[in-house]
Image (cartoon, rainbow, N blue to C red; front, side, top):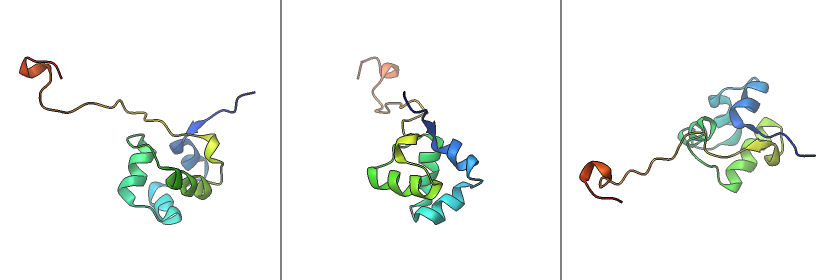
Length: 84
């Protein structure tokens, strides 16, 4: 049977915590924690351990993928008439 994985935001709400509480509990940079919670950044293994411990869950219960589409920003895309 496959375990159900939920994003960090789910466990944050379930624990009755906000981002500031998670920052204090993990001692990680506030910008990094906010980016992880919103799905804009994939946490490192150490960051995953700290966040999971602060939320009282296993790292395997949290879905760590990006929830926001990654955009490639190079400045020479289709708007310039040539492919990247």
